[in-house]
Every structure is written in C-alpha cells, then in structure tokens.
Length: 439
Image (cartoon, rainbow, N blue to C red):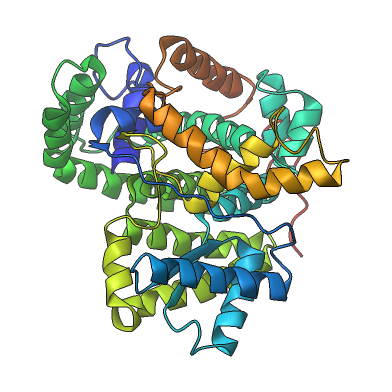
C-alpha cells in the first residue's frame, strides 16, 4: 500500500486525471517511508574473531557453526540463528542435517542482501535486449560500458538498484498515462476524490506523521477500488506482447521495492511473501540455485518454524532477522548487509586489507585484531554521537529534482508508449525492432 501511495504521489503533478494543484514532489520511496514511519533504536552489534579461510569449505563452516553455538550458550541463549548467502546456506543446511544432535537448536536464514542482489540481476537478465540499456544511456543515467555491466553478471548492487528505480518510475508514469486514456469513459468517482485529497496532503506535508498514516489507512477502500480498475486495464493489455512484457517488469520492480521495504521495517511475513513472489522470475532468468534450490528450501523451513521453533518464530516476527547500525526510521538491514557495511567496508579502506594483502604477517594481524578494533570504533562513535541517523540521501531537494529529471529523460527516449501501442508483436522500445514470432 505504501508503494502504491508513493507512486501516485510521484505522478500527481503530471496526471490529467488527478486534480492535485501542487508542484511539490515526494522524495524517493525509502526517504518517503522514513519520513512517515517511527524511529527504532540501534541494534547492539558484536564482532567475533574472523577465520582466515574460505567459508565454503565444509570443515571451516562446521567449525564456525560450533563456535557460534558455544557463544550463544555462553550468553544464555537457547537458539542460534545463522544467516548466510546461497552457497553457505546450502552447505550449512547439509552440516546441520548431518549432525542433528549437535545443531538441533540452530536456525538457518538466507541473507536478504544476497537474495535481493541475485534478484536484481535476474530482473536485468530478463529485460536485457529490450531497449532498457539504450534508454539509460540516452537519458544520461550511465555510460554504455556501465549499462552493459549492470545488465551482466558483475552488476553493482546500489548502481543497478538505482537504475531499476528510475526505469520503473518512468514505466509507471507511461502505464498511468495509458490507464488514464482507457478509464476516461468509465466511472472513477468512487476513488478519485479520496485519493486526490490524500495525495494533496502528502505533498503539502504540513500535518504530523501519525495524521498522514491515518489518512493512508482511511484511503484503503479508495485504493482498493482503483486497484480493481487497474486490474481490468491490465487484462485489456493481455493481447499486446510489448505491454505485457513491461507490465511484468513493473511487477518485478514492485516485488523488489516491497522486499527492501519489509527488510527495512523488520516485517517477517512481508519478507517471506515477497521472497516467494521472486521464485518464478529467478527461475525464468536461469538462476536455478536460488529459484529452484536454496530459496524454496528456505521458505519450506521457515513455514515449519511456528511448530519446530516457536520462540525463534516469535523473535523473527518482532524483527530479529535484521539489524540497525543507528537509531532511525526505516533503516534496518539484513545481517549480510551489516557485514558488507562493517567488516567488508573496513577491509576496503586505506587501513584495511587492500593495502596489505601482499604481507602475510600484516594480513594475519589485521584479521585477528579486527574484532577488537571494530568494537572499540563502534563504542567511540556511540560516545561521540556519530551513529545518529542523518536525513535519507533521497530526501534532499537536489536529489529529488535530479531523479525527476532523469525519469523525464528516460520517457523522452521512448518513441511510443508501450502500454498505449496496439502492436501484437514484441518490440524493442529503443530501436523499434520486432522480435521474431514464436514458431
């Protein structure tokens, strides 16, 4: 619902259907959520010693799991929750199942960051050669080499996420434009006025966050009615291949937005629901290790948790599968992302591993002392109040204006609205080239 409200707010000023007399723009989706949702306290993050060996070696991972179990027992915890990427998750499941007595109280989670990154690459693979790369280059969002990298196997997570956000917003605007034409001779009075009032209040941003959230809650019937009409429009598009293709892209992008949203809010059921929705797209992109192995196994195990480990299930429902580096709103991330932002980020700094990798002695010293130095650094930042949450980078007026301009440039690079065209063939929206018919 938050995503739908945000999208309506972003297109309100250009809409012919919504009468919202405001030139204001909502910030990016994460900043919009951070503006409305309540603050949460920072997590207590501890650092264990590193093992200077590959985590995908069975003996190394087995030893690490034993050490984590012993640490939790020493802290008085009955259960041990371990998060890993796809490779370590599958291996950890095999080790746990082989040594059930030793690891009977171990619950294994699939890392949200690696899952989202893999899904981002799946989206790019599915829309590759559709004209998306050329659109991003023509709009000035990136250079040709960067576009090729984003749609390849070495895609940078943050860079590609930003590109998908811009592209999906441009496509959503064109989708709404086509919807407005289609719905012109239909009844919209049941939802139009209520949504116009809601969007107007959100753009003005003069009321408190609780009042704005209450307005969103009260607008649910109107939003549901609008959704029903948009579903009818979607069925109308089913005969047009290009429109179906880009409608599917919007579905994929919405799943990604909601998945990140639920991660940031620590919403366990939302996290599982969006994970399940990723499955067909991961499989379609040929990402079988996630789409047909790790993720189905993960979802199956999590479905059993209320019976097999009710205490863990309740903790996850309270948000125990994510952490926050600083007090703030809408800022939780999964443990594998926390690892990227702490250990891995430190390793790439001037004082990290990058400058000393040729010296075995220095490298070993860094590995064994890192937990201590990281803990001291975290405590020092806390004492100096350096961990307070800053305004989201998407909320600044310069960033909001720049993103809006980029969306308009992407739209300008498209000759024909794919949701308005009545061509039955699948068409590259950048070059106009038709795909060969399926025989």
